[in-house]
Image 1 (cartoon, helix red, strand yellow):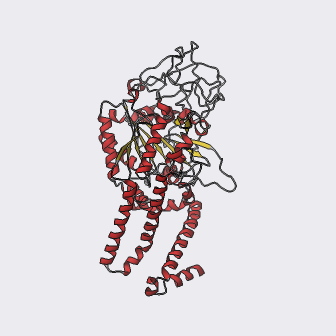
Image 2 (spheres, rainbow, N blue to C red):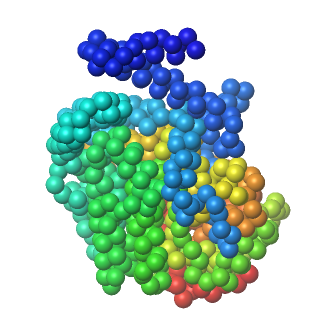
Amino acid sequence: MRILGVIKECCYPDTGALLSAVNFPVYYGCVLAAMVGGLLYMSGIFARSNGATTGRPSRSQPAAMDRTEFFGSQVGGESVINYSYTDMPWKLMMWDVRYFFTFAWALPWVLWPVRPCDGGHFDELSFTWQNMWCIFIHTILMVLQLFFILTLPLALLFPVWMVALGMAAFFTLNWLLCLGLNGSTITFTSDPKYAPALEEHAHEQWIFLNGVAVGEAWLKSNINRLALTFKRPIIGVHNRTTGVIFDVVECLVQRNFGYATSDVRAAYKIIKEKLYNPQYTKVVFILHSQGGIEGGLVLDWLLQELPQDLLSKLEVYTFGNASNHFNNPHRHVDAQTAEQNLSRTNTTITEVPLTDSPVETHSPALKRRPSNGSAHSSDTPRRIPTLTTSTSKESGASRATQYTVPASDRAIAHVEHYAHTTDFVALWGILHFVRNERASPDMPRYIGRVFSRTSPRGGHQFCQHYLNGMFPLARDAAGGFAGCAERNDFMSSTVEVAAKGSEKEDLREAPEQSWSLIELAGRQGSVVKGGVAVHGSFYEDEDGINDGKVRVKDLSRLWQYRNGRSPPDLPREVRRMTVL
């Protein structure tokens, strides 16, 4: 009460004093102190009072330094969920504000850690002239926008014409500063020196939609980093920044009111054109941060309008997704029912062995083909281990049965999400909706498998935190970047299957039902416990790890695209044949 009295005496003695130059600094200092204190206080209250899993390390049980949890995709069903993107927008806004305070402790991790910058000039916080210019402009914008918000209450004390004139001047200045960041172009293409167009990838189109506070320079760095990592040209659709604070406001409007800005419409137009183009059999859509909200809106439109055979070309991968829902329905109710039933059973399954051809399968007796496409082969029959949900003594068995999961009957071919448990945006977005203890009665559908990583390097920046930690770069003999490193701690980490908590039985699919292409290649004693469906490791075990445990690289489809490679795919006609 004493603090409130001081604030009242200093800031509100009378109207004249309020407008005096002496009390202006005091006013803003008191308001800022109250905002920061209230933010920390409310964060503690909400973290203790609601049922959300905040992700904040407890004092009694500190978080593991490096660990990865795996969440199988939600199934969907006939239930209507109240807290969803279909609910009243103002109610959604209220919940978003509440959970903003719940996860406010993670706000520093939007930028932290600022080092190391393993990606060199690609990293957002590395010391380059372009990065320093972007940070300088964003600092000015943040100060101006904070000043604007704090002075809004004072508008009641001035004539309307004066307020209108002041707002016009402010928004003009804000637009001019943002013009220095954004440029005038909304679509960009990655530099060919990082990934020239190759005939072998002519049937693919990769598209990236960026997140908050990204100007032209950072978008170019993002798409060039992706091109270098996956050795494919990347189209960047620019989600233009208006400053950090105004971008967050735009996120709330897009997320809760479904408002589509010009970049959402541009992304929709581009993806729709590529899907209709018979040249392309695969369209890969990569999203980061606010791009997850906008990309979710694009997917909603595509699901409403496009034929199913065109949607099956699409693959979606997100990082630090800020959206509150992600749709990808089954094409047939029978497939959904089968998946719900299978999620409650323990099944021993293996997949038809695959070559690196997108249309060819082979038997275990065929020769192994190395991932580099060389002519080297071995006459030794390829051992296909058993993938099981329980302990088995048949670890040396070599047997394979044809198996196609109901997940292959999804409208969109593949959806994967990557998130850090200390990333505020991921906590406020994807992780809140896929792992919340209140998920059963209140949470919307969030389709797609999720890799949730706890790491000291777990921030929010796309290149510096996500790609450097999950898809780090390798250097050549001259010290330059040569492409994606073949080994890293994240991809080699052992997967922990996340607990279901209080979810309904049919809310989340069993992990073994997540994908249609499952293979654990050539590991000794490869009996997988816990019901994890393995997607990768189609070639030699490059890590030399033969402990039979499932690792992230075994589950990540995006990992199979590194350095120009492609994951093997079955044709739809074969995928539809199911033998259990």
